[in-house]
Each structure stands twice: as structure tokens, then as C-alpha cells.
Amino acid sequence: MTALLSSPLTLPCGATLPNRLCKAAMTEGLANPQLQATPELETLYRRWSEGGAGLLLTGNVQIDRRVLERPGNVAIDNNGGEAALRAWAKAGTVNGNHLWMQISHAGRQSPRYVTGRPLGPSAVQLDMLGNYAKPRALTEDEILDFIQRFARVAVTARDTGFTGVQVHSAHGYLLSSFLSPVTNRRTDAWGGSLENRARFLLETLRAVRKAVGDDFPVALKLNSDDFRKGGFSNEDCLQVVEWLNSERVDLLEISGGTYEQPQLLGFSGKADSAAPQRASTRAREAYFLDYAEGIRKVAKMPMMVTGGFRTTAGMEAALQEGHCDVIGLGRPLCTDTDAPARALRGELPVMPAYEKTLKLGNARWLSGASPIFLFKILNVLGQQGWYYQQIARLGHGQAPDLGRGVLKAFFAYLWDEYKTAFRVWRAR
View 1 (tube, helix red, strand yellow):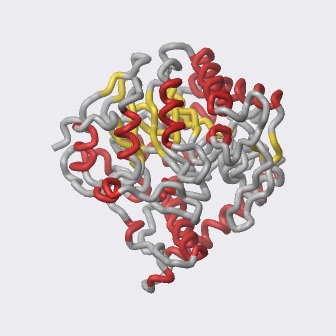
View 2: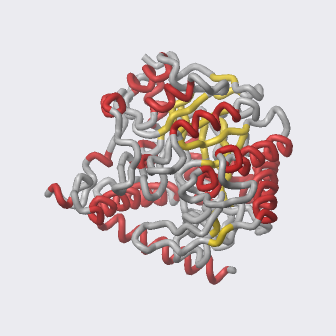
């Protein structure tokens, strides 16, 4: 039964989503060396639009071309490409669905091969296999400039045919890192108390809403918890959500974790995790549904949960129980672009979950359950590379390569990243 999944949802701004399934944001890496949209993105999003989800979220589009999450990011920063954005938006809405641009700044989470000097609230380096340089703390003038950049990019999205935007304040990227006391050690008006740490986010949302008007969807992605000792906690999240109730947010997506604690990938990374997985979470599909249940008691806007959903029964139950209004799907759509349509027709009760069998080897010490952190993280990154490779194939009009191994996918992904980074560097 998919009665609720198939039902429309009218947002506070007046826009209506045709159903409750969303293609969640996944980084594509398909921009050209000028960081503009490409025909590959058109092909990819046309396939996803035809796949039946009522809402598609793009991978993070950067407001600052100097600091990227990966070298193939699209950026909107005085680098042209408006015609390409229009073509991308047109292709991604061919089935009458919504297509929202996710707007982001990578902050300190920009690899060395992309950015020599990343930016953050404070000079706190990301501890991840030595792959990230120490960031420089933003000045107040830069913060104020970035607030306006978020607003300008939102206007560009609206004017080029995207039907909404999502501000990315999760997973340790710039806005998210301002929320955390671990990464935000400022002593000015942008640090210290939670109210100060949330100021960048709240001012950004206000600027975006003012720029795009009252009838254009503005969504937010927010961590339910950073899962780090001393970091942005679930209690902090609940307070921020109370403040968000006054900011005219049309859809709040709940996620969690950072690069150092990638719970968004179903993995607890390092020993400083502050929140072991709850027993009720293990019994459910979605990683963050328990947190959404608590946040729902506070939030006055519609909510979306992404991460782990694989059965239509589990999705329907989450909607029926009132814990969320929209179901976010990521990895299943990297191999089966028509999974939403098939699920809505009742033809796909269980979506693919290749991550359950993707691992370096059968021995426990080579798997994601390895007691050796290096092998644990290699499994995570290998799986991630495998899905990135599938997205690239879809964008090039090819079929997924389901037989590719984790290690091969990981090195192919790295090779593609370095090649793309070199081309971007040459184009600067």
C-alpha cells in the first residue's frame, strides 16, 4: 500500500509536491572546469525526473568557487553558466516534479587537492587521513558577504527554472560547522552561545527568503546531532528548530553526522562518538527517524527524513506515524532511477541495498565491522566511490556497473577526482 507515499503535500509557501518521495541530495561531480552545469547533469536529472519522485534535490551547489566539496561541484560565483543552469532545470522537471537547488559552502571540508586553504568559523583542522588542510577563520565581513551570496544564488536558482532551494546546514559544512562548539571557537557575535553560533544560519535563511519572495520554496538541511562529544547536540538541534519556526522554512530535512562521524552513511567513525545507535533505531530502517520523532514535537514546518529507507512498508509507516512528511532516497536511485515510480505503483516493496554486500573482503577485519579504523573508513569510502561511479555512468547515459568491486571503484573515483581537480586548476 502506498496511499500516503502517493499523496500530494502542500508546503507553507503554497507550492505542492506531487508525492512524498524525494531524490535526496547526492554530490554529482559532473561540472565542467569552469564549475558550470553540463549536458551530463541534464541527462542525469532527466532520468531521475522520469523516475517518479515528486521532488529532486541537487547535490550541493557552491556559493564560493575557491572552496569546493569536490572538484566537480557546480558553483555560482561570477563564473557565468546561466544558460546551462536553465537547461539543467528544464531537464530535471520534465515529469512535472519539483527540482530544488541545494546551496552550500564546503567550509573546512574541502580536500587538499581542491583547496589549499579552506575556510571555517575557526582554525580547527579536519582530522581525516591528512587529506584536509588547516582552515582559516572567516572575518565578520566575509560572513556577511557569504550571507548575501546564499541569497544571490537562491535568486539565480529561481530565475533559471529551479522550483525551490535547500540551504545546506548539515554534515559539517560551513553553516553546520558554525553551529558546533568543536569547530566554532569564536569569541565574537558569531560564536560562544548557541544563539550566536546559530546566527549565521538564521541570517542566511532570512536573506534567502527576502530575496526569493514568499511563494518560492525554501528548505533547510539540519543535523539532528553531530554525534561528537562537545559538538552540536540533539538538545541544541531542538532549540534551533524552535527558532526556525519563525523563519518560514517550507521543508526541514533531518540528517546527522560529519565527515569525522559519518552517520549519514550508516557508520560510526571515530572513538569520540557521543551518541551510540539507539536500539529502536536499529529496529527501524531510517537512521534518523528516532531523532525526527522528537524534533517533530517542536517543529511547526513539514519534515523530511533521509537515510536508510528501503521498504515501502517502512516509508508508509514513517508517514502514518506522523514522524515526517517526505521520504528522502539516495543510494537506491544511483542504480535504479525508476525506483520511486515502481514503489508508488506497488511493484517495488524493497529497494536495492548494494551497500550491504559491498566490502573489501569477507574477513571481518576487512569489512565495515573491522576493529581497524583504516579498514572501516576504506570500506565507507569504497562504497561511496562505488555509488559516485554509478552516478557518473548515469550522467553519461550508461547503465550502472553492478559488478564493479569496492576497491576498484574507490581508486577509479580517486583518479577521476584528481583529473577533474587538475582541469579545474588549469581553468582558473
